[in-house]
Amino acid sequence: MGLFDKWRGKDEIMQLKEQLNSVSVEVSNNNELYKAINKYLSSSFGLDRGDLENAVKHGYEGNVSCFGLINTLSTIFAEPEDKLFLYKGGEKEEVDPEKYGINFLQKPNHYQSWSEFKKHWAASYYTCGNSEVYAPILENGNNKGRLMEGIYIMPAQNVTIYAENWKTPIKRYGFDIDGGQVKIEAQHIWHERFAPNLSFTNGLNYYGISPVLVALNVILAQNEGYEFISNTYAKRLPPFVFFSDDEGKINDDTRRRFNNTYKKHYQGNDGTPMLANKGRIEKIGFDSFRDLQVLDTLADGQRQLATALGVDARIINDIAGTTFNNQQEAMKKLYNLRIKPDWRVFYDGINTDRLQAYAPEGTELRLEPDLSQIEALKANLELMAKVYDIGVKNKAVSRNEFREALGLDIEEREDMDATGDDVLDDFPTLFDSSNNIDE
Image 1: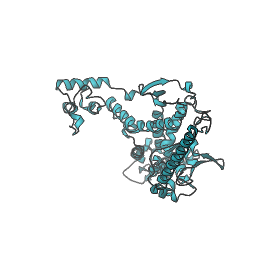
Image 2 (image 1 turned 30 degrees about the vertical axis):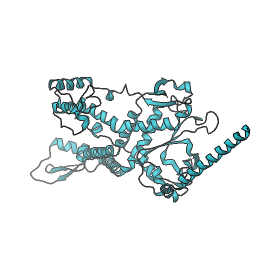
Image 3 (image 1 turned 30 degrees about the horizontal axis):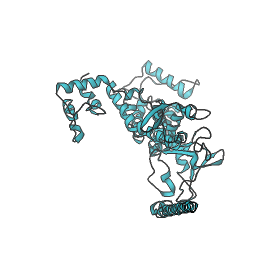
Image 4 (image 1 turned 180 degrees about the vertical axis):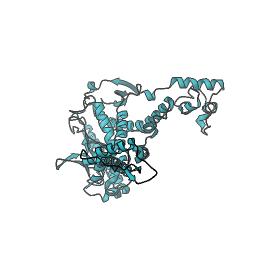
């Protein structure tokens, strides 16, 4: 009798599982929006390959402003050292990656260090709007989910996404190389996007938008300026025009400069032009960048590029006009508005997609950047002391009272009237006020 009851229990369990599966299928089948989005996908889709190739060729590789900005951002992104932490029962403990068999944090592949890999990841992210990492994993066995070998950045301009159906929108990736294409299953790719594409046409929503493509017109205009400068200085327009004029007389210095310029750039060593004693010389062509008026154009292009990448252009273009304090504030803003969100994308991606397969049961492994050594993020203790000193003299106890004491506008928020020991913790007044305080 007991044995019969045991088998009956198994039957009931099987029936329950079938019912749950049925409910799951029904819910999935009723997902009309997702079905509609994916219904008309072709077998492969993606951005125009030429577009991303142009972003790399004309932007990252072919424009000094764009390359410099992306190189700076990716260098800052890769700056912090990383630490691995084990989370268990609300407790956090720093651990040695090798203890858990995690070797790629030192040498992610055969030719890169971890720091270089992070910089490469960021450069691809900022240039192409996509960072696609080939990180092949074991699909079966005790080590399921762990890496089979190293991890590699794939050039986004050489990648195609293949769709299967609305339940499996991304089935595999295709990587074009040497005239052929390698097909890679989706679970082996770690793919992060800079900004979502808002179009679902042809599966574009599965790609990120390239900031360089957004600013490509600005980049091409700058490149034309560079080419014009190069051609002007290489070919040289005529240096002067001579006008007959009874009022003017050509002095020896003018004659010598004309002869030297003409001989150097136009006639080689074949002869020297002759000038009459009387006349007037008018310069034509260009002798300097200032004559070409390209400096303002370049600065404007840099501002546009910075805007596309979500960066305060003053950090890049206004170094000469900054003081120590407001430059530090600008760098702090750069970290808060651009670099920190990108760190979150990177570390959330690697923690979720790859590290958990190495974590013991009931625990979580998380890679985190060590920000304690980054100068721009350290508290400015001297400035903080000045703010506190002014606040104490004015008997300020709340955030808004500190703002009023510092000559700043009052903010209509509930927390701005709060009091306590932490009124200046993570408080923008500290840096907003730097220009209001006598140095």
